[in-house]
Length: 153
Image (cartoon, rainbow, N blue to C red; front, side):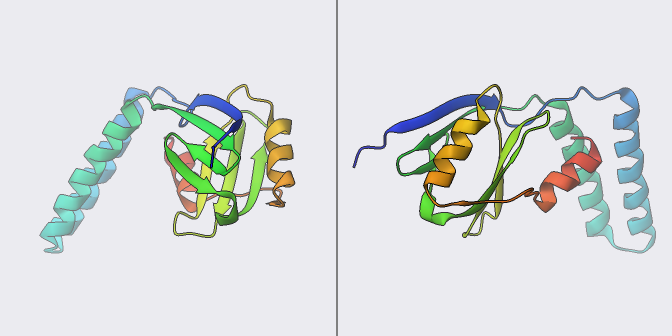
């Protein structure tokens, strides 16, 4: 069966916000503080994990997000080369404020997937998903979305 593209767009995975020196200092101090507290409590492995975790958060915070291609096809929602069939999508939400994004809740282990809309017309996407009898809800946010927003990522 042919997988005809109905709507397609490209966008960065998330909006990059340059970090100030203070952000790196804060992450470093928190990581070292947790590591020292863990070391004092004789939890050496957690101390090491705290240091590696702090360094990882700094690395992720400093890199620019990759650009992905998103598509609604006749068979499902395509992120790069990964297809999510329409029958695996439970409901969706379109956040129209900047940055505009499409959130999709799946019936599978992946849970909620967020895709930036860039400059794509969200009305086309809404129409295509509603034509597939997928329920639209006011808002869908995953735990990870809230956590990353809180950390400034």
